[in-house]
Image 1: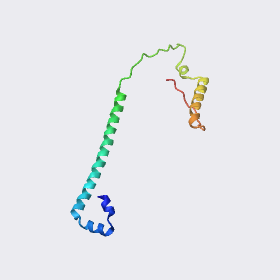
Image 2 (image 1 turned 180 degrees about the horizontal axis):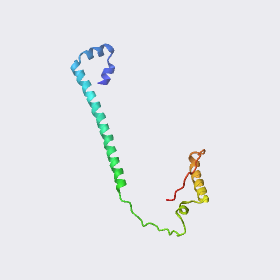
Image 3 (image 1 turned 60 degrees about the horizontal axis):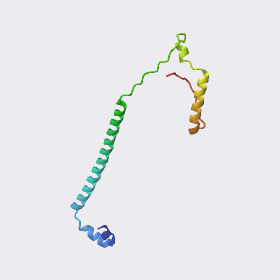
Length: 121
């Protein structure tokens, strides 16, 4: 049909377009609008459904029980105080800083990274 329309000259096309009643043209326009709206609604539904599935799978992943291993008992000497246990010597701080700088050196060579606090976990 499109090939026939393209083959017509402008006079034939104008004469042919007058033969289509306005009600039929309005029906075609209405059907076109309806198809577009239904298509968009279908795409919105698919995106919503995928979001629900992803959120449920992430909730399932967080609700799975974590296998608890036996905690390692580290004997603490009686003469150590709480301040001594949380204190980290300067050599350890230097090693941590060097490791972090080596890691960030690849991505950002001008990284100005400073350690403000080290907390034992």
